[in-house]
Amino acid sequence: MKKKTDKKGLGCLVIFGGIFLLAGIGAFLMQAAPLYHSLLANDWQPVNAKIISVKQTSSNSSEGGTTYGVKGSFSYQYEGRSYTSSKLNFSSGTDNIGDYQKDFYQRLRSAQRNDRSVTAFVNPNNPSEAVIDKGIRWGMLGFGSIFLLVFGGAGGGIIFAGFWGQRKNKEEEKLQAEFQDKPWLWREEWQQEFFTANSKGSYIAIAIFAAFWNLISFPIAIMALPDIIKKGEYVGLFVLLFPLVGIFMAGWAIALYRRHKRYGGIKLYVDDQRIKIGDINRGYFQLPPLQLNNSEAIISLKSIHKYESGTGKDRSTREKILWEDTQRVDIFSSESRFEFNVPSSLKETDASNSRSQYLWRISIDSKQKGPDLKLDFEVPAFKLSKEEQLEKEMEETDLFTADSSPSFASRVSERGDWTKIGVIQSYSNQGVEYLFPRMNTLLWSIMSLIGWVFVAVGIGVYMHGAPVLFLIIFGLLGGLFGVLGMRSALFKSRVYVDGSNLYYQIGHITFGETKSIPKENIRKFDTISLTSSGNTKYYNILVHTNDGRKHTIAKNLKVKGDIEAFITKLKDELNYM
Image 1: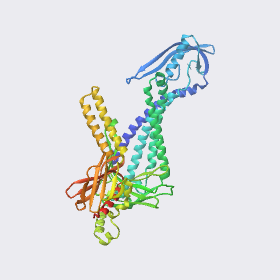
Image 2 (image 1 turned 120 degrees about the horizontal axis):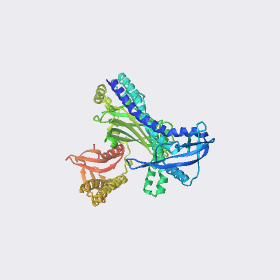
Image 3 (image 1 turned 45 degrees about the horizontal axis):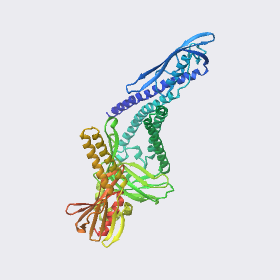
Image 4 (image 1 turned 180 degrees about the vertical axis):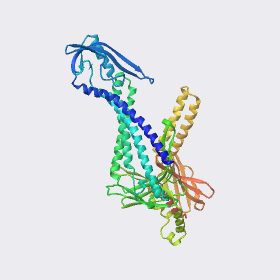
């Protein structure tokens, strides 16, 4: 049944892609035909001709645009015989590509009005065939080429993707049959003992998109610009934004290419060739010889839900981080090792539904001179098998095995550097003091500004006669974002530790009252992420007390490994076990 479904799906893709491909080829051939005739007319003979009639034709589209054409006839003599022709050039129909049609009409109309001869070109092999303009209209050819590249490229891409997807499905079915109880070996790219980054695919995809974008935006801007300037309609200069976006995307593709050339050889090794959900996972990066100026790198492991939202033109692909852990490593060592403890409640890798996929990603990020070291590796993640779960339980009950190496919890401080989270340490009469200044203020300020813009828009449209509902919706949503963004941008906190108590102050403009938490009343320390920007999560540090309350002592922190290292230091200062 699956094979029949795959064939039916492939057939639909071929038909759908074929329609686009044929449309692109057809549109190109319509504009290439005049080019063919112009080349054949290269040796046609020039003669004097008189304009008999000429008129400007026009056609209005439903979108309000107007296209123009020229019709007429002329007379000429060749080798002592008289002829007439109504074929003025090799183009047919109407168009608005540049000012050719208007200029051509004005030229012929002026010659007719002043009884002036024009030059026509006669086919010596068939003297009854002649034209006045045998030139090539490069603008029309470029217009047809855009259709070929966009529609033909899209159609060809869809057909290629269909056949490539069918081949990939067959390979995966073969691997699934061979490794029935090992789903982390069900893909060809998972067969190696190491993983490589998808940096090559990233820069190729951006480069192709940038090429298509620029092939469309630049000709349109070039053709529109003279008319905009001539008519003084300078608002139309916004069309120049599209080529600027194209230049930005081309630069982005070049930056990604440079990053791939420098770092694309990095290999990722993961124990047991996959992430084990519900267990401690270890691995390392193997770096080729590189000239690096910064030894620190942030390693992150993310569980991601990739899904499509919206329909039709509003459809978009989004990613939501379900879980994340980060740590800091030294990349100057021969092997950059990492360790993550993955909760058992998380989703396994699942790409069976293209509209809702669950995937896992390991990332390495390090600021370097030149292109930053910033790579993503997609890795399989699956729960422990029954045999592995049993083996784990036996290890946990074996005292000799359990005591043979430090526990994951005891190594938390090694996974990060608490001084990197932006905290300022000092000493006072109260003990050790940690000041958390305002963090990531630019992000929250932008969020607040957008919120207040929404409020202003709501007030503006209401004052210009819009229903009060607009004021309520824009005002409430904008006000909410404005206030939350402002509070987050201004938030700061201070924490004191004296060995038996934890004190903290929070505030926005100034600090509020000092709150005290006795060590014996602390149930646990915790981190929580309530906000994220792109693929970056921001964490708050919470102190849970025995009375069920949660005290937020710091906000808007990045790199979970660094935060956990700070919590470990707080516990040490408190002698908290």
